[in-house]
Amino acid sequence: MSYIGYSRWLVVTLALMGCEGRQSEGARGSVADAGAVSGDVVARYKGGAITREELVRESRRLPPALREQFESPVGQEEFARSLVDKRLLVEEARRRGLAQQQDLARQVRELEERLLVQALLAEEERGAGPATEPELRAWYDAHRSELRQPERVHLARVLASAGGGTAAERSRARARAEEFARRLRAGEPLARVQSAGDGPERARAGDMGLFARGELKDARLEEAAFALRTSGQVSAVVETAEGFAVLQLLERRVERIPPFEEVRAEVEGRVAPSRQRRVFDALRTRLRGAADVHVEVSARP
Image (cartoon, rainbow, N blue to C red):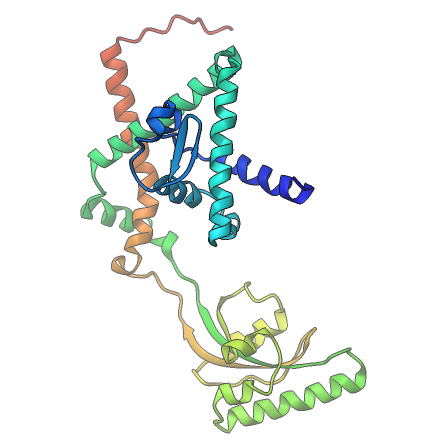
């Protein structure tokens, strides 16, 4: 195996080891069991088999960048071999008795306990049901100020780049920007004017997006942007580190507190942690009461 091949194998195998999926029963069965594995078998080995279902499930647990490498038939074959390798490594570790090592067994128990507690809490939360309408509205009424949206401007920009930044280049860039401003004020469509401009927003027909105060990196652009009052208004030419820019106001949004219906999903997300805490506290109290807990450790002075 080449160094590149080994490195790729190691990355994939370690990624698989990090997945929290459990082995199928067929994976740890006998040779006879291997022939009885249900589903579309994509790989066999002495002692088990890998099914198509397992291949798909395990691939979904990989990081997206790594998953894309195994979408082709050749990649899927390589991934199936990696799944077999993982099983063989686990079985060899068991054969050597490593599963009985005290420290390793403790870590396995701790992982199992953690997963069981997570499953228990998830079940309790499902049983408690979603937050009620009155509960959500009560949170909204008590936290309206936290949902306040600042004044924002929706901007378009046409940039004339100054290139290397020499005096002559900056003079030419300013003249271009002045021409852009003239064309925009004359009512020429923004997309047509922007097609002659520079800057990354050219791919978006000049649209820079929404900005609140403090979000524009260039203070000169921000001052020009918030001086614009009406939709369609065009700024004076603004000198920037990149060159010379002209801004056009697409929309101005005043400071506001959005209505409950508009931010309902956000409210649900903000309420969720406190609900989860209440569910946990109620479960803990119930279990402690049933277990008649007595703590006998004395607090040291």
